[in-house]
Length: 162
Image (tube, rainbow, N blue to C red; front, side, top):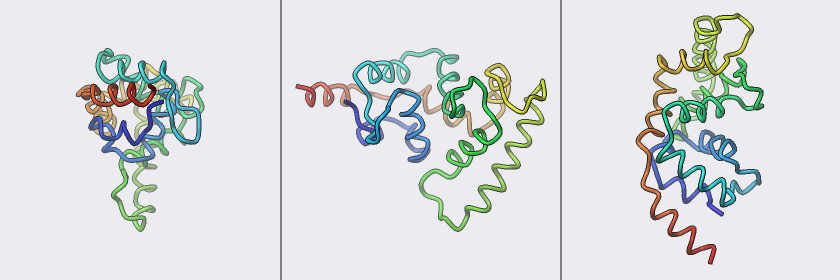
């Protein structure tokens, strides 16, 4: 099994903070408290970081925001993930109120501009329009697009499984 700690050294995506990494692992298939991936999920994640199309990477980021797996991003889901991305791991807790206020403004603005059918949630198509303009989403997308050299991680995983 691949552990988050090993993955965190593998690429720039993990500069976004522990909460974002935890959500990424959940979307990639980690389903236990230790955050491990089975072999199939591990192989899929290697593919995602190295060979996937831009649309597949956008779908992954969309799924990171869609906490309940409904196929839509609701306002609260949007706000929670926005806070996690902006905050990262290096922000002092005394700025919590500022992050909540900023994320509310960003969420309200995004919903007003991109929720074109005014149903209170973003579809994948609405998300694509939004993600083209938002620098925080672009940070996630850029980290995925750069990919990472996972050869060391793969070798370690294979050695540990033997």
